[in-house]
Image: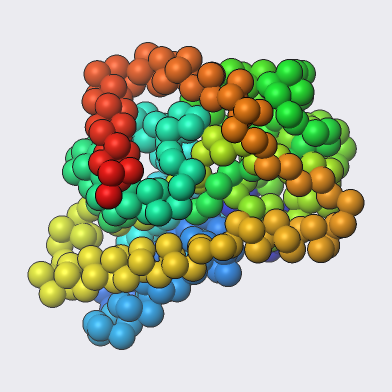
Length: 344
C-alpha cells in the first residue's frame, strides 16, 4: 500500500480487512505471538517505539510480537475495534481518535496546554498523575489497558500562504482530524476546519480543496506534505501525543512474569523514543528545506504567538462543556502536573 493510505488514512480495502481479521481471529489462540498495530510507518516515531517494544519482549520472554504498520488492518477505528475485541493485543492510537470513545482524551488538543520546553515536556509525561492514574481508569471502561502516552513532536502547520496571525487563517480550509475539540481550536484560530481522512489530504491540498493541515515535522517530511504546500509555520501550540494500549482482558490474563515483561518493555521503549526524538524536529525541517529550497519555514516569535495563545481559554471552556466534571478534573490535574514538572 502507498504511504498515503497510512496514518489516519483510508487503510486497506474492506475485503483485505475482512481477510486479515479472519486470519488474526483464527490465530488468536496462538499465545506465543502478540499482535501490535499502530498508525504510522515502521520507520516513523510510532513504528520505532513498536520495534523497541518488540525487541524487548522477544529478548526477555518466549513470545514474539507481530507488527502491523499504517493501513495494514484498516483505519484507526478498525484497529481500535480489533483491539477491543481481542483480535489485536496492542494498539498505538492518538487521542485524536480515541476521543470518540474517551472524550476526556481530547484535552491534548487544548492549545498551549503542553510545554514547549523539551525537558519539562518529558518530565510531565513521566510523572503526570492525570496520565498515569486518572486516564487508565477511563481507558479501562472501554476494555483497554493504557500502558503509556508519549509525545511525538511539535505540531506545525503547512499552508499555501504565510501565517503570522490568526487573520492569515481567515477562510483557509484547514484539514483536521475528526475530533470536535480540534475543530474548536482551529475555529478559534480563525480558520475553517475541515475534517478529512488522512488518505485524502495530499490530493486535497494538490487540488485546492483544502489549503492547510498540521503534523509534527518528521511526518511532514516523511509524507512529503511540502510537495503540495509552500509554507511551514510553527506556533508552539501543541505537541502530538499518542497512547499505547493493550486489550484489557488479555493484559489482566497475563502471568505475573509476562505482565512485568510487558511493563518493562513499555518503559524501555518510552525511554528510547524520547531519546530518539532529540533534535528530530530540527533535522526533519532541515531535510524539507534541502528537498525544497524555496519552502518557507517560519518559527513565530513569542509576540507573534500571543494572539494564538489568547484563544486557549475559549477552547478550554469548550472542552469542559463537552466533558463535564470528569474533563475539568483531568484538565485541572494536568495543569498541576505541568506546574510540578516545571519545578523539577
